Amino acid sequence: MTAGCLVTVCRGCCCGTSRKHPDVDHDGQLRALRASGARVRVVDCLNTCERSNVVVVQPVPAAR
Image 1 (cartoon, rainbow, N blue to C red):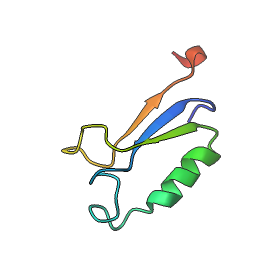
Image 2: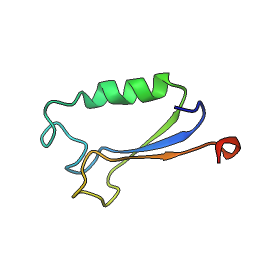
Image 3: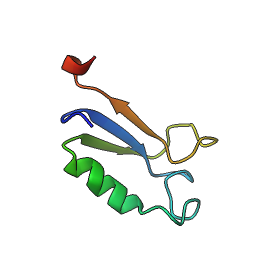
Image 4: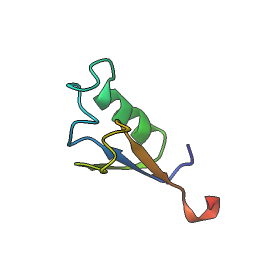
């Protein structure tokens, strides 16, 4: 992952929860993303519930 990129993570609705994905370490996933140097934004819902546990990666301008 490119350092400084913005990663938006769905965590407030059903998708990014242990209720729907009990085998995923959601907190660990956020820690790993932050440790990679990415800026992480946690949002309630990305309105893609049919896909589930969604992240959106926005690269830094130099990587576009």
